[in-house]
Image 1 (tube, helix red, strand yellow):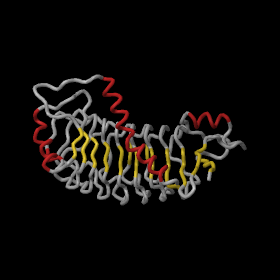
Image 2: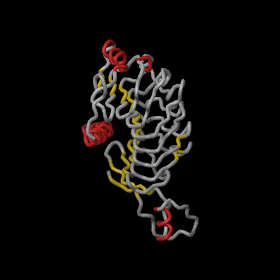
Image 3: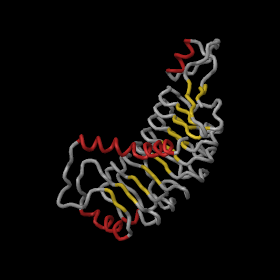
Length: 284
């Protein structure tokens, strides 16, 4: 099945389209020619809306029922309002990476009752309400890599009983407190790659009783300073797979910028590629 999904005003003249493409609000007269800015919808059993790179400034709202996969990456979306996903209840996989999102409200994703995978990589998100994903009971994978996140002190970062994979790589995180992950009881995979964490206490990970794998490859270091000894020992004793540099003395050894850059790009894309391969394998 292949069709086109109109997501902007159905009749915009040339000047109106210019305003839309440049994120300028337009209240002038419409004309008969429909907008050419469309999402392609494909799929046999499940419907996929491919809306990447369409210069959208807001979440599209029209004709979006029965969709399972929506790719809104590489647009100009800046804010996710409370009712933006009101008609997206059927969506299970949502890509919002490579936008300019800086604000998420507490109930922004509440209507996405079937959401299992959400990618918000490479945006401008600083603060996320702790209960932002409280109503997403099926959400298992959340990607927040490459955002200027501010992790609250002495408070849970996020609260979710369903989340099993969390990517907060390359977010310029310098410290994590013992309460950061205390409200993610089923988290099993944690990606902390590329953060300049100068030290981290094993007590940060003790609340994550189901943690199985942790990624802690830090840009610029082949090994970590001695204070990490206890943390790495904790991973070993609890059979947690640790992907990162070993402890070294006396000083960390810098690695080349090229290696760091290639590594970061590859790690950011891993989970997205896995999801796409899964769908291809299932022939949907």
